[in-house]
Image (cartoon, rainbow, N blue to C red; front, top):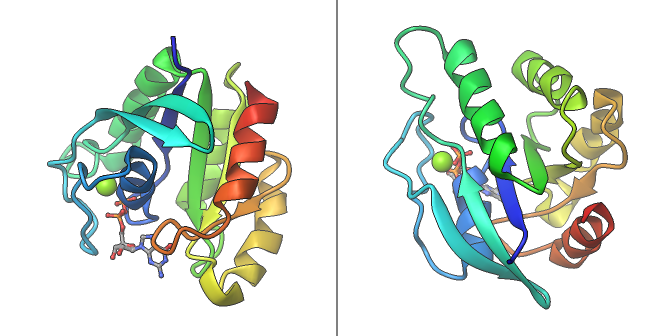
Length: 162
Ligand code: GDP
Ligand code: MG
C-alpha cells in the first residue's frame, strides 16, 4: 500500500498548490483568498519514485465557530490516516502565531512531521526558512510548490521519515 501523506497548515500557505503538484494534475482549487473550501481531499500522487496517497486538509477555513477548533479537529483526523505529515508554512510571511499553534499540536503527534517552507522561489523565503527552525520540528525544507523547486529535498525528507 502506498504511504499516505497529509498536507497541513493554515489557510493560504499553498497546501492545495502542493497537493496538485504531487498529484500531477489540478485536483484541488488554488485561490489567493483564504477560505476556498471546495478542494478535493484525497488523491494518488507521486514524488520521485514514490507512489503516494495524498490528503489535503481544507475545510476548516470557512468555520464560523472559530477556525482554531476546526483546524485542530481536521488536522488530528488527517494525522490519524497519515504515515507522514507535511506541515507547510509561507516563507515570505515568516512564522505566524497560527503557525506556532499548529507546530505545538504537531510536536505532540506520534507521526513524523516534515516542515516545508513554501514560496521560497528565488530565495525569497530564505529569512522565513531560517526563522522556521524556531518551530522545533527539525530542519525546514525550503520549497516552491508553484514552481516545483525543492522537490528533491522534499523527496529525501519523505524517504527519511517513512
Ligand atoms: P491553501 O489555502 O494552503 O490551499 O493555499 P493555495 O494552494 O490555495 O495557495 C494560496 C496562494 O498562494 C495562491 O495565490 C497560490 O498561487 C499561492 N502560492 C502557492 N504556492 C506558491 C509558491 O510556491 N510561490 C508563490 N509565490 N505563491 C504560491
Ligand atoms: Mg487549499
